[in-house]
Image (cartoon, rainbow, N blue to C red; front, side):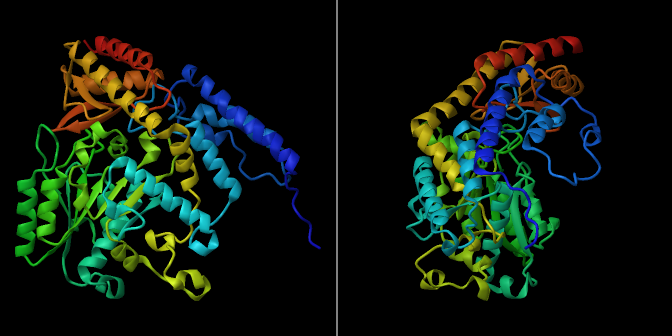
Length: 479
């Protein structure tokens, strides 16, 4: 009998599990006093780690100790109440416990038969969530479409493009490759970079993506420019395959006209994909659904609970109106996966709904969030973010050294110093370097701007005010 490694006993696992939860709780309690952005230089963390793995096993206590010694000083603290950069990545207590349960169960849900509950809980949770967002009936699991949890919206966009190519080619792309159809993809100049990456991964190449201009005030896609680009391509014998619409762009939170753009896309048989990665979750509040008008005619839709809706990364919810194109593009059934349930046609095998075969039980953490917060709690969280962003906009308006760049978009505010780009970026970097808060930047119509995205479950008005005072002090230093 070969030697076996020393596994934790149930008693030791229980003790160390309590210690790990205690560490997380202590970490959260300490965040307010930590600099938001990591205060290390390249290589600082690496130099504190040994060159090789230990030969003999170490106690788990040593791992926890090194979190404090090595890891925490090298972290940018995404759960910090004054983390306002990019978009939030909420990791609420309920979601963490759900993720822990998923890890403990350790099921592989590639097909229904490998753990029926992994599939069926996910279907129900996504039906609940679709209803909470006001999505159309076609997106429910008992309709022609359905939902699936992807890792990120980038994967969802890639998956949507594969489905679009399958539908447009009548399955020829799956069998014979891209051929000579000259496939073309459309998105605004503000579309997420994952659109270009999807085209690269699908074999279309960057040149297949047409970047459509935007309205200079709203940063939303110019529909006349979209129509002109598609018609020009069609005249050249090229084939429109997908139109990507942003319902809350990364840069400014711009909202494309899903109704108008969708109508143009359908005239030419193109797939309509609505990317609401950040802003879509706001639709749990009925008053914040205007940006999703027209989604009922979209072919696919994605939003990320792991951004603004209290669910630990990764959890990107993706729906299609008709699953046939999706599974037609991705379904492969080797002999070792054959089973009676799959062949009965009565179950969903989620391996056919994304590029990966294997899949974790991600639905538990979203299930935990929906159940423990309830829709009332989720709406309160979203409304708090929107109200705090409105407060930021008021602070900007009250200080003539600053000006708004675009109108506030839900919980995102984009503004700048009137003194110019250099002063804007310098003031932001001074705040970031101080560790007081963390902000990110963008360019709008060629000019630099600061992005402040509210949404952490730990952020209060006091955190916003403290950040604003730091920005005012940094602005004064630029005078």
